[in-house]
Image 1 (cartoon, rainbow, N blue to C red):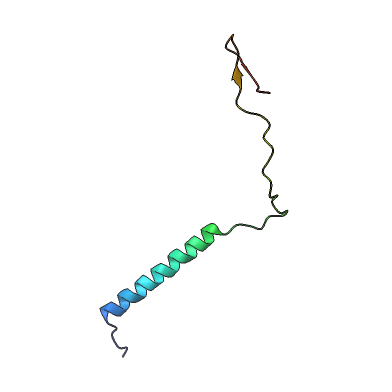
Image 2: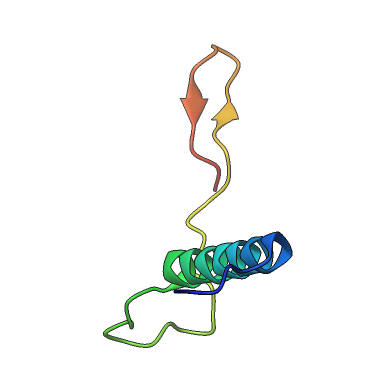
Length: 63
């Protein structure tokens, strides 16, 4: 006949299983596929700024 475990032991096992589950989910959520080509260290070039309004109300690109 199996020996009964204490309530505290059952709760401790449940908490440990929960911690392991959450850690596994966090690791899985942060896992990403490897990039085919490495990212460059320089940012992408900026083509311009926000459009500049003219006197007639239309917008033109900033130079």
